[in-house]
Image (cartoon, rainbow, N blue to C red; front, side):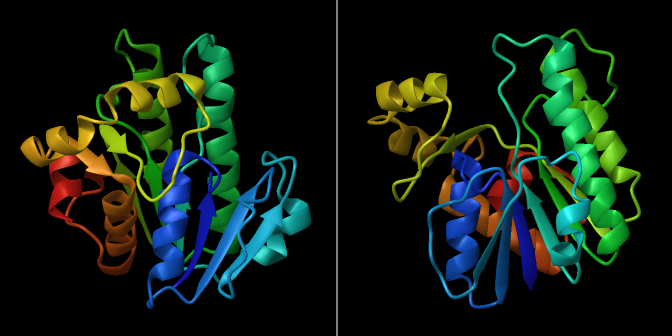
Length: 219
């Protein structure tokens, strides 16, 4: 597979990038973002582009892709719904619509979250926006599209979150997270497992387009 990763410098994206580089079935890995990952690998091609709302200057580099792992987003903490939707809905759709046009045979995998509101009418702001994003992505003419809804993700292999609040969370709970993961394998997943699950869904598909934690654990 030739794959594209957005958000490769974030916690989830770092994990997905690592697993793609290790996977013998992934022949080329393209990252697209506003900053470089800092990694060097024979399979890795990085596109550093400041404006993800307008991809015309880099469109030609986005052709011929088999899968996109969209791991990009921001926390809702301290943001208005308009600010949150600007990144998590509008930018996501700008990227996805471009990909649907230039690589229509692509499988699009979107990292959403447990509790996402598919009705788009609930009280929780981030869940409404994520639900609206999922619904819009599922309407695009990709070969296939999957919405992945992880809960707690444990960073592995030196992966770190860029969000300070999450770093504090993992620092405080780090010693007990492996025990909790063994005890509740369908509620907690680590970055290695999540990356492997995303690759497997892209490679073989899945019976459902929305994957909850139980589905991810099964994969």
